[in-house]
Length: 275
Image 1 (tube, rainbow, N blue to C red):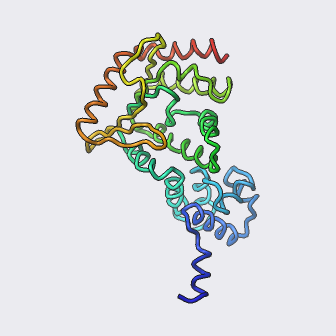
Image 2: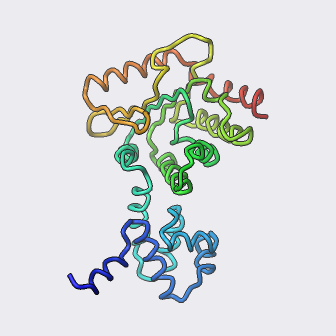
Image 3: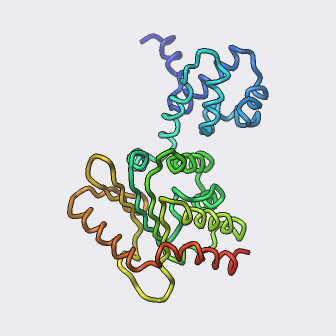
């Protein structure tokens, strides 16, 4: 290989985000738009445009959609590229879970420590992730919020969330953050076809209390289980493991308060601790 080719290859983007940013910059410069002008069309500021073009920030879907509208003959290219960018924003071990979550018809979650990422507010998610002192915090928060789009689909997956009451009382990010998060959970509890159940704090142990997990079901194919863990979660797909997780979830349902009692309890904790 010649020196010239080596230099040219070195200038090529090496990540989906860098490629996306380079394409945005090339199209913007071709139209002789300033970053401020593109920012106005994409409802963001100069700084975000600069960071996206520099491969430093994962944009929201709306940014990619604006690019497809602004740049002639884009034909949806930026939204397609954005999908690759978003996938790469998740840790490699978590990407398969996000893929399966996106096609699941039923999602059953149990959490004994924190509100699940799929229903976190942006402020709550940021407060949780800040504790890890991560250099790509903004990208991880964006990726987590984008996951939640599946709940806004015309036919969303049926979501069933069981939480230990301690999750609602454990202050994350301050009173204001918790107020917004509990309001989000209360609204979810009142929104069909979703279900929220709370296991009350009564000092009694219950089956599964020591570990959080999710069960995913699909139109086609067997259920799978995702178990939270450190430093990474893992999947269980063996029939016996899935059967054990299903039985554990059934026991959690029986232990928790009835679904119709969830919203009143959340409201009570809101008034008691976060008003």
